[in-house]
Length: 319
Image (cartoon, rainbow, N blue to C red; front, side, top):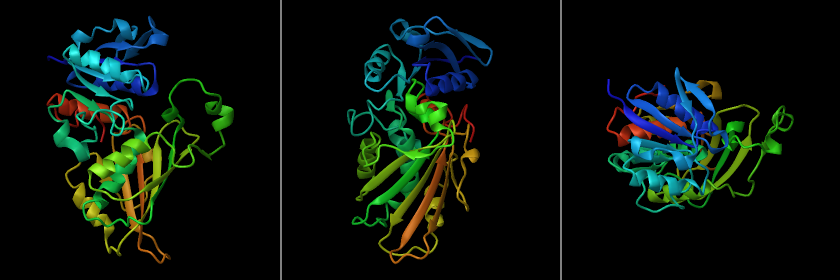
C-alpha cells in the first residue's frame, strides 16, 4: 500500500515525539525523517521503524508531502516556509502563524470551527493547548450572543507539566512540582490569549476573558473550568452544546464533569455545561478536558494533516 511520506521537524520535544509515534502508526502516512538538533545522530524506534534524528538544516524536505513543524516559537515559521517551498503541505505547531501573531491568510487549525478553511490549504497553524480547550468549550455560546459583554468570562485551567516543554527548568523539577499546585502567568498575561481573543472576535464574540493557568503535578492533560455570565437564563444549556457538535466525533458533551483520565492519549475533548445555582446573575459553568499532547498538540496536528491531504479526518487517531 502506498503511503504518504511525512516529516517531523523538532522531534526532541514532547509534542514532536508524540507526532512521530502518531505518524508511524498512521495507516496512510510514512515517517520519512525527523529532526532534533540536540539529539542529532541519535536513534529512536517508532512502531518498529528506526529513525536517525538529523539536524533541521539537513532535513530532506523535498521527500515529504506533509511536514509537521514542532520547532520552538520564533524559529518555526522560517522552516514552515522552506518546507512549503519544497512542495510539502505543512502543519505548524508553534505560535508563529496563529491568529494575532501570524498572517491573516493562514487558516487556524481548529477543525470543529474552521474546517472549510483548512481543507485545501497549504499551511495550517495548529492551535495551542489551552486555546483548544477554551474555544471548543465557548464556541456554542457565541452565535446566539448569550454571553454578557459587561462581565468577563473567567477561565481557570490546569495543565500537566508536558505543557511546559521538555527543556530543563528549575521550577519543573520533581521536587518543585510533586505534591504542589500553583498558578502562573497571573494577570491575564499568558501568550495564548492573543489567539483566543482574535478567534473569539472572528467568530462574532464580544466579551472579555480572564485566564489564569495552573500547573498540575501530572504529566499530561488539561482541565478547564469556565464561568460565563449570561444575558438571560437558559433552561437546558447542554442541548445547545449537543446540537452545535452533533456531527463532531472528537467532541463529547457529557452529563457529568470530566476527569483527566478520560481523555489521556485520546484526541477528544469532553465538555460538561450546567447552570450555576445560588447566584443572582444567570451563569453557566463549563468544564472541558483534553490531553494537551493529543487534542492540544500532536493529535490535532494529525487531524489537520488528514484534512490537508484529503484523508478521512479521524485516520490514525483515537476518539
